[in-house]
Length: 383
Ligand SMILES: Cc1ncc(COP(=O)(O)O)c(C=O)c1O
Image (cartoon, rainbow, N blue to C red; front, side, top):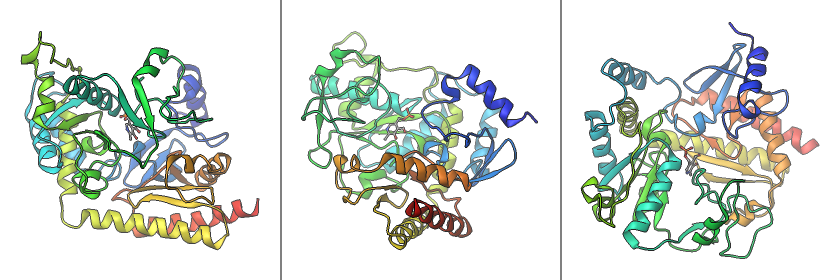
């Protein structure tokens, strides 16, 4: 087996920062994933980590779930990607339409960022208006229209946007309006994290608010690169290639869209999620983790807020209740970095700003995690 340090050095040469994206472990804590199984990741040295990053969310069933592996292997033998409509893609779309309140039709993309990008394009085509409004602090992927005011380091007055990346043309500033989170009515729901995680019908089922359009990704494809836009036919018809040549046509296509492997993995994942008691179990696991984390915060007298719903939540080191985005800006960023690194040191992986819960996390895993939360908060309280 290749030595982990050698692999890390090779990664540093050929990948910017030695990373795949923005997820960083911290100095001395870097590792290379050898495999993921259930609720665990294993590094090249065979060290086991309890995984609350879950591939940035999609692995709701845990890694290498037998039903998903089996569905993918069966589909693999029949080819991977056709660029032509196929049975798994049709069946997955039917399942999304049946599950999601706002969905009458589905258009596939390969990533969540593309799904939000095209949701905005089709919304513009439908409304015949250019400007979009997004909420401050909301992350909806990495394209130019949404990587705005996600991290407003010294926030501007509403509704002025602030680009969060170099390379975004200044002209886009004129097309994006920023509104305070928790105030306003959105047209498009980004359900890339919440879809099939908060409920089988997503956040729109959980919160009982039906949007005009929604973007799904992550869980819907069980760990494969597939995402989609879902909405009523009146809006979705703009994607219909029969409109080509008319001012109503929205051109949207991608090599891997609706590929059969990802659709098969999604169908197998959704079949598991439809089993009775699934969401009750997910919410129980998440609620125990949240309650245990809150108990440790209280026990060690740390000024911090546990915020989010049981299937995905996090800790904010602030004494302000997390009621809107600007409240999150009062949180101590150095402390959350330290919290994440102290967890990793003890074998718990999480996203930079999220604890994703899976159905593979057992009672024993929860107990082990809570003991580690307690230990880490005791350490932070002392320093
Ligand atoms: C809420 C939300 N929207 C969109 C995206 C972008 O999805 P992708 O990473 O598949 O492009 C993410 C990714 O984390 C997300 O959390």
